[in-house]
Image (tube, rainbow, N blue to C red):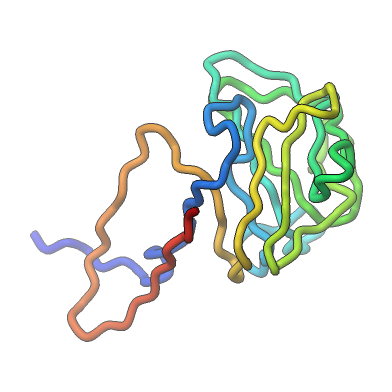
Length: 173
């Protein structure tokens, strides 16, 4: 049986970067998009930047009092409400400048992400310890950046001879 052909848009959806501090941290920033146009809409139908926070532990974790920031000089820029991450679960926070902290609703930071590439960090409740952070390169539209997941596999996508395809390779230090 011949392998099915997949759309080229599935070839490159996430660029993995190696600049995560404390890659074993739980919780951690696992993925983010700074030029969201079509990949994920918020509750208003707006295509806002977003940050995914992942719990890499087998037990639930409270994010109450943790922080997200895009400014290394202000590590307590946006505070998480009483949100609990399930074991090996995640939460999406929109970086929209809408500043919404209702734990029962969609979360929105009081800042947006810059497409030129900027610092973004998850900070522990002490307000000084950075659990995970990135200083990524310039961002591409609807391409997420993040860390690999343990147990993840690379999927080979068949492409017909003569078909053009694009892929991105993350720069590392």
